[in-house]
Amino acid sequence: MDIDLSAPHSMGTTIIGVTYNGGVVLGADSRTSTGMYVANRASDKITQLTDNVYICRSGSAADSQVISDYVRYFLHQHTIQLGQPATVKVAANLVRLLSYQNKNMLQMGVIVGGWDKYEGGQIYSVPLGGTILKQPFAIGGSGSAYLYGFFDQAWKEGMSKDEAEKLVVKAVSLAIARDGASGGVVRTVTINADGVTKNFYTGDSLPLWHEELEPHNSLLDILLASGSPEPMST
Image (cartoon, rainbow, N blue to C red; front, top):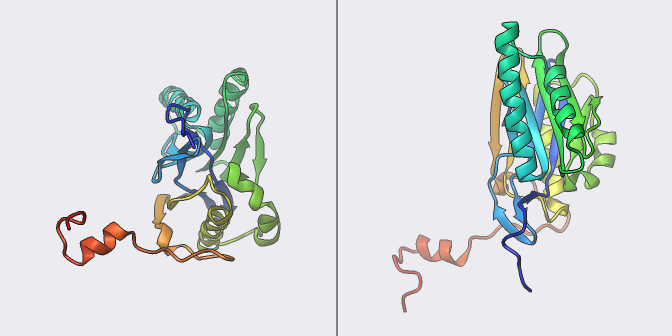
């Protein structure tokens, strides 16, 4: 099978944003693929826009990165002009504007989440095409197809911070188990009135689901652990 390594980098992804009583939790896996090839197994798909607003990126890595860079630049100008941080709504609508105006050239879907003093924690979904939806929770990427029923059952209003964090990690691990384009580690970002907290969950610490195989050390790891300095020597 021929693998085209020059194909565009695509984040066949699982991204999630959840509101809770006091803020939001964003989560994502870390696999970036180039066709059938995993180009990066530990990428960071949760990107900072301002001190209080982050964006989860899916689709074309190049498209979502350049839009995030433009939005970050414009929000910095906005903050200087107003003398106060931009609201989550302003950031999300700026993402929506750039996505809609360039919808014929962009292949990306994002989730914007953050906290501000006016409306508290907010989640906005900006899918392919550039519309905008304010939701109590949002899911996106190729892994989201496996999660809609789960969130209908598991999400509840007024969750605590810990409940929201556990829900996001569980949901991403479920998507990783079923979706070949999602994998690696789980990253979360919690945003509230106290600031931003980032967490990192390694792949071997995630729960195993139906018919998943337990991780095993590679042959190279086993040989190195036995003290052999040259695994390929005879």
